[in-house]
Length: 303
Image (cartoon, rainbow, N blue to C red):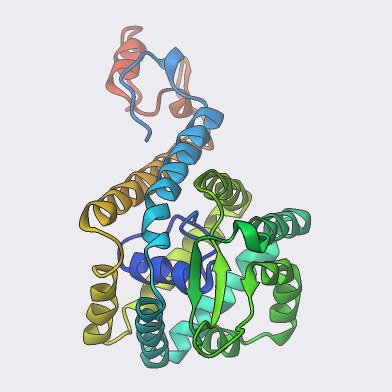
């Protein structure tokens, strides 16, 4: 289960295919800050957040055609390889990942989690006459494996209750041939969900979120290379090459925007450094050379 869209590199293969399998809209889920302007033009945190939201919308836009192209046989092939990877991952690392995920989720404001889950479930709960594009949901042991990895049943129960509205999105299996599926909403709805997920992720404790990302990477590194390669190979079968390239580029920009926002938030929290005759606020200038020159012009160098 991918709670936040900040995961990258080794995490991306699993997070992308998890969207196809469980349709929790992680690809809708499913995270650029650059400036050489004077200090007065440095973007605010709100403006930086807007850039992350814009990047998330681009991810949703580029994921849309890929998701709509997935056939049941492709989804089943991906599902088999996810199951195999989870079964071969180190159980201790997997447990730590699940436990950190639950801890991060449960640290969020309860109302925010419930609201996000209800919005996501309602978005995919389309009437039959609007369900023209379906995302197949093959049978899988992935969620069972993740559920069983949790070390605290009480925390797991609370999380399951909070995420219960997501069940509205899944259409049950009506026959062995058709299987379970999820109705894909219009692209605009996927973009809205992307922004909602960014808002939810921004409410999470940064240290917990970073710890979760690092632990997820550690768990994925325990998957045998041949299984990781097989899972990666499945992605090359989804959609057309230009579509996959656009999706990959959008994910890279999302990651860059998220990292830039995290850096800016860290700088904003840096206390003033005071010297004999003045104080220097690194949060105001972002350590840019032009701001330093303005400071040094008064004869004070902060080192």
